[in-house]
Image 1: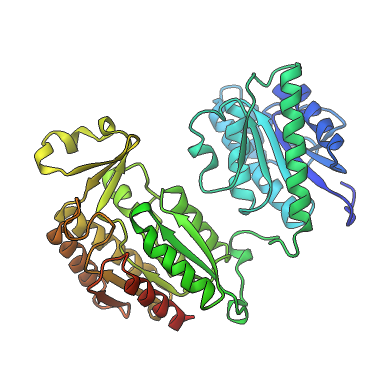
Image 2 (image 1 turned 60 degrees about the horizontal axis):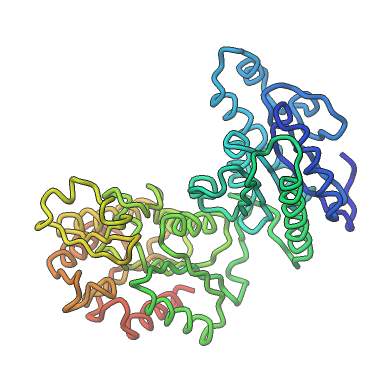
Length: 436
């Protein structure tokens, strides 16, 4: 590959050349026409293909696959999913290298379900949030949550199958090419875009940066608190606030940015995703929630916003194990698409124990972790007179957290106000400011 100059704008195109060479070549040309000065075509097909436009492939790039991986892929008895996994891992490594060397300014792909399942993990895992990523896919009009995950992949529905040439597909490809080139120009023009990911991207100069980057978790029922917190952090302290909607992917995104060293502190006020992880809701952030900030040792103030609820879809989607005895479960229809289930005292005890265990096991520095409990209610609808008001459940949650943190140096503070009271917002910001 030629050496890039300061005027170059390079786009990586990832695809399966053994099945989509014609289409990928057309996408490549349209990307060049849109203003890219070079295109690095990365071939992730199972079978080797020879073409002058291919830049990175198993036959062209030393170390692309190990001998064992090559043997597995060449074995005709190997199933498609296993081969796809091998090629995805290999391409992820190649794209990571291209990115770390500053050789690409955007990434583009096009494919069906197979091509999408190849390109999406590469985009998620090899590149940081913020780097231009665009995926033209036949499945983009469906549920793309598993495709996008916690990343910022831009999905574009292909409308027609990515097969051959026609006026509509050509128009969509041209739009995609123009979009990724535009995003790449913006990325390149940024003053100092991060050029590393993961462990190597962690910033060791946090203390020298006067304007801190603060992650805050929010849900609809904790919005008044978060709005006040954001206002104080921005106006009084001049900090930059990143609000993450605690919908599962939001929590994952925050954990990832913490791990990449792109947040300096956290006000983890809304830990509702823990409820969904433990009790089968549809907004779980996975089993590693609450670990990243503790492990990195950055200032972290944790609360229990919206732990009064497990999130499900329309009422009919609530699992039967919860609806067999409706009298024992309190369901609240937030809207036509979201049904909230009130957590019981036993469930709240489990939630509190889980939160305490995560903090206690993973805290690099106990002094940098504080827990603040809103005794007046954990959400807008859990205050006195609200549909989810349940003092015994809240008490079980608070007691479990305090019991679970015994033996650690993590401090727990209790306020009589509810989580959305202005005094609560002021208090948690003061605690974080003291840590900063």
